[in-house]
Length: 429
Ligand SMILES: Cc1cc2nc3c(=O)[nH]c(=O)nc-3n(C[C@H](O)[C@H](O)[C@H](O)COP(=O)(O)OP(=O)(O)OC[C@H]3O[C@@H](n4cnc5c(N)ncnc54)[C@H](O)[C@@H]3O)c2cc1C
Image (cartoon, rainbow, N blue to C red):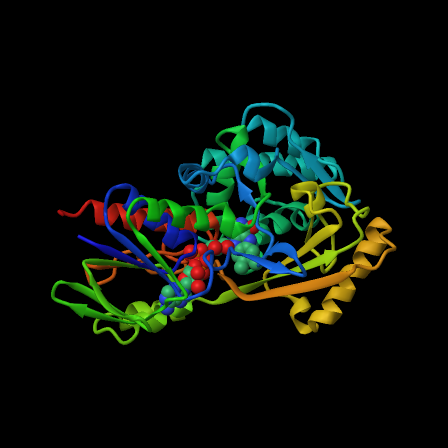
C-alpha cells in the first residue's frame, strides 16, 4: 500500500501526518512553492504576514492535537483569549470564570450595549438550543432561525450577525442555521476552554503544514513542493498521477486540492463527472484582509475587537498578538459592498475608520490588501457537499468543503483529512 496526497493545505497535511505516523508510505504533491494553501504565511516588506488573519477556537480539538503531534506547543504558538466579544464603543460581553455553559449565559446576561429584554432573549435562545441539542428538524437560514427565536434587530446586529459571518463566512440571510448551531454547540456548550479564541503567533505555514511536512519526512514520506498533479488516471492497481516531473501509480490517492482544482482533476475521469459538477455548484465567498504597518507606538486597546457598521469587521493588533508592533490587520469577511471598491480605496476607508474610532492620527508606512476571492464555500442551508469517498474506491476527497458538521474552517479541513486517512487505514494492507 502506498498513498499520495494532492494538496499541502491543512486537510492534505493532516491526512499525511496520520498515514505516515501509522507506517503508510506517503507522497504529498503541492503545486504552490509553499505549503498551507488558504492558510499560508507570506513575507511583505520584510514583515511576516499571512494570506489572512485566522482565528481558531478552543474546540478545534483535532487541529490543536495535530499541531502538538508534529511538535507545536499551544502555549507558545497562540495568544489564547477567554470568550469575550467587543464591538468598539457599542457592545461588549465577557465570560466570567464559570463552567460552561454558565460562563456564556452570564456573559450574555451581563452584556453591555443591549437592553435587558434583548439580553434575556439571548439567554433564553441559548437555553432552548440546549434543550433541542442544537439540532433543527429542517435546516433554514440563520435569519429565519433568529426570527423564530425572537432575537431582535439590535441583538442580531450586535451579536449573532458578526458571529455568524465570522464563523461561516456567509451573510446571515444566506447562512445555514444548522451549521451555525453546530459551531455554537461545540464552542459554547461543552467546556469553558472550548470557547477560547486562539490567535496564532507564528505564520500559518509554520504553525502546522511545515511541521507536518518535517514529520512526514521523518517518518519516511516525501513532500514535493512546486509539483502539482496535472491529471489522474485510474489503473487496475491504483491511480496514476501525472505531474510535470513524470507519472507514478499509488494504491490510494487523497485529493485535498481546493474545490476548483479538485473539480478540474475529477471532471475527465469516467464516473466522476457528477462529483465534479457537485463541487462546481458550491458558491464561493471572499475574505479581505487589510494589513497596515503603523509606527511601532501605535496599538489597539485589545488584541482583537470588532467595529459596528464599518468596512472593517474585526481588527487585530499583531503587536499585542505576536510582538509585531504597529502592525494592524482589518478583516472583512463574506460578500459585501467592499468588493465594489478598489484596493486603494478600501485601504483609505480602513485608515479613516482607525483614525475615527481610535484617534490614530499617524499614516501607515505601508498597507497591503489581500483579497482572497474564493476563501470559503458559501455555507447555505441544506448544502449538498461532496462525500469523502468517490465512486472509485482508491480515490478519496479531503478539504474544508467536503461533507461534515463544520463550515469551511481549519478544523473542518483537518477533520476531513483525518477521515480520509482513517478510511485508508481501515482497508486490508
Ligand atoms: C483569508 C482567509 C481567512 C480565513 N480565516 C479563517 C479563520 O479565522 N479560521 C478558520 O478556521 N478558517 C479560516 N479560513 C478558512 C481556512 O483557511 C480553510 O478552511 C482551510 O485553510 C482550507 O484548507 P484545505 O486544506 O481544505 O484547502 P487549501 O488550503 O485550499 O489547500 C489545498 C492545497 O492544494 C494545493 N493544490 C491546488 N491544486 C493542486 C494540484 N493540482 N496539485 C497539487 N496541489 C494542488 C493548493 O496550492 C493548496 O496548498 C480562512 C480562509 C481564508 C482564505
